[in-house]
Image (cartoon, rainbow, N blue to C red; front, side, top):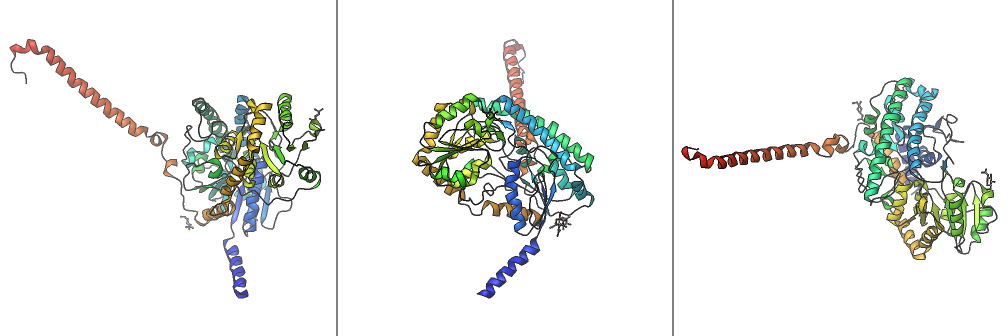
Length: 512
Ligand SMILES: *[C@@H]1O[C@H](CO)[C@@H](O)[C@H](O)[C@H]1NC(C)=O
Ligand SMILES: *[C@@H]1O[C@H](CO)[C@@H](O)[C@H](O)[C@H]1NC(C)=O
Ligand SMILES: *[C@@H]1O[C@H](CO)[C@@H](O)[C@H](O)[C@H]1NC(C)=O
């Protein structure tokens, strides 16, 4: 028995050594929440014996032995508590500009880094590159220069400009749109909204961000093929969601859902928060609008509405809010600018979550089976909020509709014991998988390194737009049909002319 065990340990050690991969992680985006997800994955890859080189704004304070940072820290502001808590068309327009601007700037910041340039100069060998798929394709150029197969990683649903390159349908009639409401059942108005906004963000992406990225790459590390082409050559896309939450979507075989891997083990609450929650006889509702939005920018009127709504409930509320003095002196509120979200959501007394429905918060809520009231602000949040409602994890409420009454109604609905039972069942479904999301993410990364010459891109990504929409076939039919119509009309005309001529033609009996 012992011998078998020893052999087992030895064998697994052996595979660890044999399969140790050199992995380059290219994460130039300065958003803390994105890195928060990736970090779990990268540390796990290291733990499983791989050698990691991580380009990011967030160097590890005490990195494990085979985790090597190339730090971009200090080259730009970290994106946290940066956006106002409100939503309108202007928020959308400025989001588009923000994404293009940062996608351009963080590419330059990365390529100007001497150690990044050193990787190219020394032709350092990597078995696989993990490249964030978000608002820049800069990392694809770097991976190409190093000859590494690419696995694209995300922390959210696809950005609008990513569907085409992987051949994924983005039909506005049923594919939820990242930035806008409507989910998988949009109204006609919402579909029109999607098309108009899509033209706006895609134009910005291709003609501003991607073009600048291409030029920056040429300037700092040399010419590479068109970035869009390099994007299409990615081996796999690891999408950070799962159909239990986001619904059945149409993905090719190289697009893998790995949503959920970042949620770690919850710890018991401590200190004043622990006492506050323990004394909540009817449970607590957790409120947070995430790390990107500064919640204390909420207008006085909306804040008043929320506070009035909260007073209608016997539950207590734990609220992530930056300006604690603003909410001081309320017995039913525990306010702090920083809260251990996972530990709160995991607590048995937590009965609901009023949230901006960012993908991480939503993932954590479904993980622990906490019903949500989702009030989306920016990014993919409108799409997530729609998914939350469609899958039964919670209800959504739009910022413009936020009043005392609408919030009371929403909270009442999710606080219903039957509703909470249903969400607990949904959470069980979420966890029931053939392979944990972390194992899946690791597996496909290693797979890409083992088979660098294989590509499993769908043919849909390789056909021209007119072929994809079969406009070529359609035009052949249109031409054929026109010719037939023309011939028939010609024949008819001739026949009619001859009919008209007939009486006069009596003199000429030999007509045919
Ligand atoms: C691991 O990565 C570091 C940093 O890129 C590199 O210096 C080192 O040579 C790598 N180790 C192996 C065994 O390849
Ligand atoms: C916090 O709120 C109080 C009361 O509304 C206000 O006087 C103060 O300026 C705010 N502080 C910050 C840092 O916003
Ligand atoms: C991939 O293709 C290259 C070039 O054709 C070849 O040298 C290499 O051995 C191939 N790798 C694998 C794992 O088949």
